[in-house]
Image (cartoon, rainbow, N blue to C red):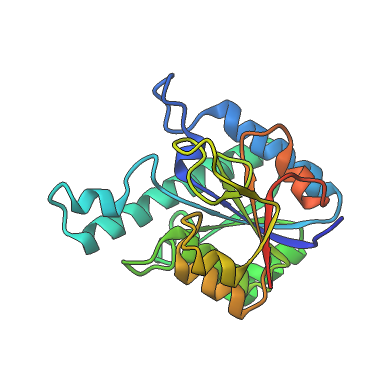
Length: 236
């Protein structure tokens, strides 16, 4: 076991299946639950931050006439929907969970209280953080870095569509260089877009390693957790 307490950042788009017209693909959610069950059995403490891009993205909404602040709040609500979808899937697999939100929604989730979140983790519950930071103009990457810092996570695991960090988008630049390991400073100076700069900076200040990995590679969450994954490690 390479890490003890982890925070997994999952994009909203990772949960959808466009071919089937599904915002939440039950098969994808089931695979996440299966992997979480494996690492919980190894003694992991697991927290999750999920994006809302499969439902609504505030920045995109702003280009279509929605006020940016309003759009960001709409995006935060989308992350809560995704948090509940993940919660349902995990509980169907017999995993205890808690959804905690940065915006008060007592009928469906607990408010985020750091000490309670840590206590849930210590009791073996998966804690899903919804509604981002609760503030507009901050991405869910920043929310992930913030929550990872607050709960003293050993690592922030960022799930993506590629197997690590590249010098450029490997889809449009086949000759892009892949990094096995990179420092926070290099990632910032090269302006690599895998996470926003505020998220990178927050992890750097609090010495939280970041592992960027392929969400769709079989059992990769487990592989990264045990130190065998093929993702890119970002450290000092």
